[in-house]
Image 1 (cartoon, rainbow, N blue to C red):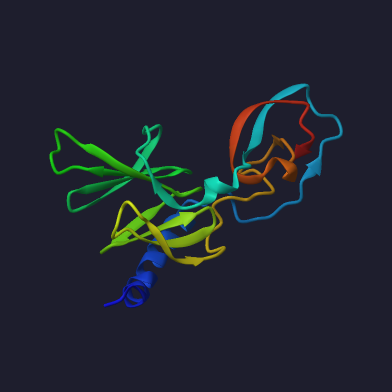
Image 2: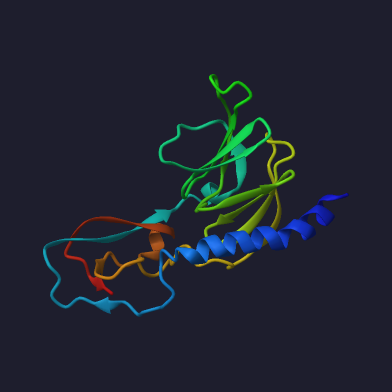
Length: 191
């Protein structure tokens, strides 16, 4: 069975699982609102700030050397290998053949990753708002087998996930890959 045949059969299952997971917690809402300029912004207020990716190479999906687990998330175990999500950044690949001595093998860079599922040697995850299908048969050379664009609404590059004051998006700083809360000085946008 070639990779195309393996992809078609489980693709609907993975797509369904990821769609259910993504829609069950719609972190960025479904209603689009126009930013409202703030005529009299406060000098200092807690609000939203865009997180930019200005490195075009950072969005490349590839296996790299292991990284420190900073904010480990969901896990999936396949055989002797544990896959752990690093929300927004990618997936840690850890050998757990000896549970008392786990060994980090690789880190798969997947910008914006929030969910994952694995069937056979195929890993399904999101790359920001796209569904990506990864061939992980050779963990040292992970390949994008397929991509379906704009399937999810995980990141809104124009507005934050909540209401209130926020830093206006500046396209010159790069692509918005998420939002974080922080103290803002004289914010110009409000939702």
